[in-house]
Image 1 (cartoon, rainbow, N blue to C red):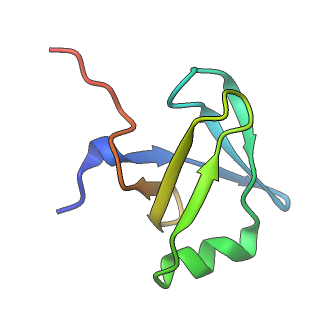
Image 2: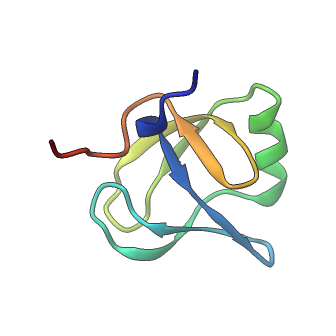
Length: 80
């Protein structure tokens, strides 16, 4: 089972990839340095080091589906 806390939503707008907010600094509508063609490569097993331009935090993307990216570390913080 895929750990939900390691996923983050993304959107494709024209030829750009955005996240609604940064999982590290919470900045809204962040354009991430990821090309549309790289999504297919990631879905077929290639890993991608993603550096968020807003705060320079780094995460390795290990898989993607049409709506979410899967990282090798926790991106969602749950409070109990």
